[in-house]
Amino acid sequence: MEILGNKLAYRTYRHTKVNEVTIDLPEIKPQAFPLESTGSFEDRPELEGYTYGVAQEALDLNRTQGNVYRKYLADKDQVKASQTIHLTTSDDSPQLLDTHDIIVEEGGKLSLVLSYKDQGQVEKFRNSLIRIIAKKAAEVNVYIIQKEDRSMSLESVVVLAEEKAKVRLRQYEMGALKNYMNTQVELLGQEADVDIKSIYFGHEEDQLNILYHVNHHKPKTKANLVINGALMDQSQKNLKTTLDFKEGSGGSQGSEEEYTVLLDDSVLNISVPVLLSHEDDIAGNHAASSGEIDADLLFYLKSRGIDHQLAESLIVESKYASTIDLLKDQEEKDAIWEYFRNKMNKR
Image 1 (cartoon, rainbow, N blue to C red):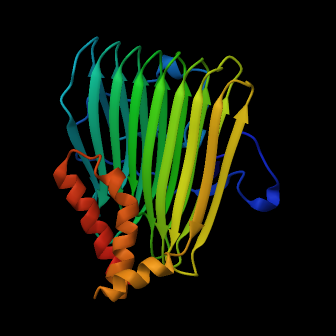
Image 2 (tube, rainbow, N blue to C red):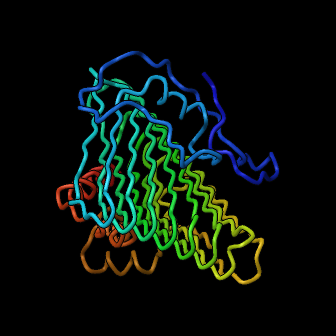
């Protein structure tokens, strides 16, 4: 089944080919994914009226055929210890349709790591829905790690942040044959604060299609989005980021930045930063830059006895380091570095 996903909220010229992407979904086969669930798919009333996710068809798949549902709760003023959830597709269980509801009540605190990888030779399919609801003065830290070599992955993230809520979202997108990411943020309460740090790595013939959309609804809200990526071989990336300051969001701040290292001439890199405002009293910034590795820096490292391949790897690692260092799970941190270095060593 073909669907249209990652649609720009405000369309531009068709010839740019950034308004949406065509996704060819595989046939979904009934199966029991080997992971205990904490319930079945629930419709969240808090999300009624909002458009989010890679595509509505992707959300409907999880509602009707999802095989993993988990809920993570922190009650009022409760502090929940960080936990790591591992989700692995295999040749025996090649399709994962998982939904995660992260709900933190007023003054609560919760941290969660979701780690995805695949094993085996059969091509896999993953459709993930991650819904983060942060009530007044809540603090939420979510880390999403993707290390998939033979997967088509759809990853839909939606964040609702109420008054003075703080959400820290970290995304580590290190692979996948075809990777469709969509992150929607709704800043619903005054002084709501969402900080997103993300890295991506395209290699071989990976295709990445990524969309971020942040809506500022109330005064003095804050959003910060920083993305660092690298592309090599014949990989392709299409990234769209939008900051939208709605009427009534005066005094708010928003920043979107993306930096891409191009390791081969054969890569395809497209970036579309968008800044919209219905208010005068806002501070909005957006930037996107891409280019080859600095020749002087490469020469400097090689003059110190470091071979070309390792020098390239070290330079890209320096771009990733600040985001990877935010991970508290040392095992996961080491796994990301190992995955990246293994891929770079194949150059």
